Each structure stands twice: as structure tokens, then as C-alpha cells.
Length: 98
Image 1 (cartoon, rainbow, N blue to C red):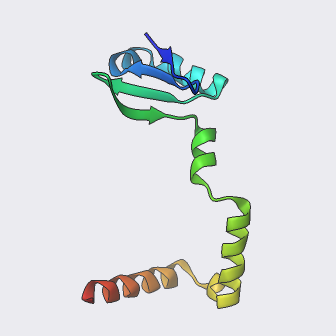
Image 2: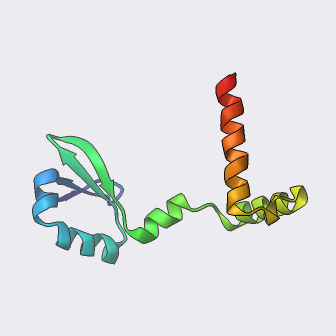
């Protein structure tokens, strides 16, 4: 049986999550809440809506803007994917020699 924590997070057992996954997905999206999945009373995973995940994982617009400006200033904004891969490979090789 799901229960709500103080911060409105839904807490369910792994068994309940497995047997009611579709309903829980709908609830997470509709109520904009997260879901903690416990196994034997220990939290093991968190299920978030895609919107909440993107909000947590994506950098803020001002950070992206600063990164873009820095890239233009350094001239790295015109690098191809292949060139970027080569720069990364060389940096990793240099780091592993230390």
C-alpha cells in the first residue's frame, strides 16, 4: 500500500511498484510527485516524471549561455565531433601518464 512521506513523495514497496507500475506512472505524471521504491523497508530507487528528471538534470539557461560564450571566446565552438573526440582522447592519454 503506498504511503506519502512528509514532502508528498509517494513511498511504495518493490512488490507494489511491480504490480501497479502503470497506475503509478500515471499518478507521478498527473500529481507531479516522485516515487520512492523500497525493498524490505530500505529505499532502493526513485521514479520521477520525465519533466522532473529534465528539470534536475539539465543545466540552467544562464549556465548554457556562459558555456556558449566561453566556447566562442576560445574558438572551440567551430570544432567538429571528430575534433572534439580527438581532444578528449589526447587529454585522457595525458592524464593516464601521470
